[in-house]
Length: 461
Ligand code: NAD
Image (cartoon, rainbow, N blue to C red; front, side, top):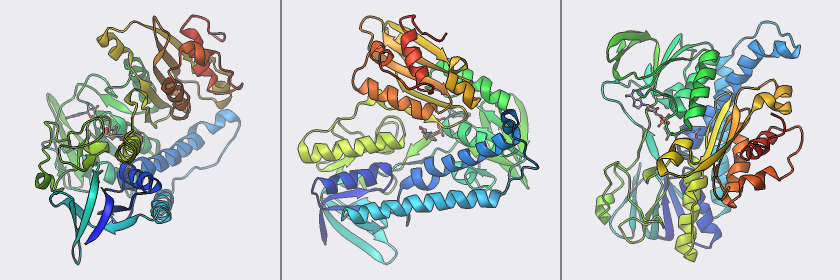
């Protein structure tokens, strides 16, 4: 029997990062992953392939529709979908192999197979040729999540599918119906709309992007509608069925919609099946997640859990932070994640990025705040780029001026939010951001101006 200080189950961003940090801290570590490729949903079937498709499809759209404004005329623009998909696969393979290299460099033992807890201090790994037994002083569960099903929607792994299928359609759908106007629905809906599909997004709520700042979500809906996405809000899907080569999506109180592809994107559920939780007495909470304390310890001694299987946002970078804090907690006794400064990014065009509290949250919590807004229309850099949709919004405590939230819709919002998150981690006030010199002309000046606007002294508006 192999013995390790730590066995990590799952090699997604939470698991492999935890394994590397543990090795750096001197632990003897094994990482078990059921898939032959490392990197989890994020690298194989989520963040990375979707960003490749978003980039390529945006270039296609830009070449067709926007280059002419720059005085660049192109002839016939054609899509070569197989080449586009091949590039996606190459990027994914390069990165997943990179994780292999990182595990080797850190002398982490890697096992391929389905791991499960097998009583205290033991992990069994079911492999093609038998079961491997591991002894572990500590175990971290980092098994992630999978797409949530929806009653009545008959997933067939082809025409009616989830993000997994929508990342690999072999042809551009004529009409794609997306169920759910969240991160996945909007990102992948945008990809296929840019590549030529008619895209109808059905959302149960009366708004898109629940959880994001209301004002930005409303702005985003207007921009995406202008781009060609069609939204039907307040729409409850009761069924989606294959009818020959087409699909029928049934909704409450309206005639069914006919389309050739359906993307179900109504959230994700934690992956805990077959994990052997009962062998160490762990019980799931009412949301199907593994309960942990502030050190990521479960109710079973020596068993920890991080990422999508515990509470909170299902984001790769949140899982990474938890992996590091969990391991540092085990080894040094200290480890902390600042959940108030975890950014969220929707990689549409323009991007939408957010960190900290929304206005609705602050109002609900009875916190008095001041707001500074700066539109990209007034940004010199945004004008030069020709991308002026959107704004930056800074929310600061009315009494202390501490920044409580920053919300951005606009060009490169996903990069710009990092400055806000860093500032908030250091407890910055809006005055602090406003007094930092920002290079001109940059998009980042819009954050400085929004910070200035908190005290009504923006210069360029
Ligand atoms: P989501 O929670 O972001 O959005 C799901 C949407 O579906 C919501 O708007 C919800 O109101 C709607 N919905 C739920 N039931 C419905 C129904 N019956 N009919 C119509 N609409 C319904 O979920 P997602 O987009 O599936 O993404 C899953 C997870 O993956 C999220 O937690 C997200 O954080 C993560 N993710 C992140 C990124 C990123 O960081 N860029 C990208 C993709 C996914």
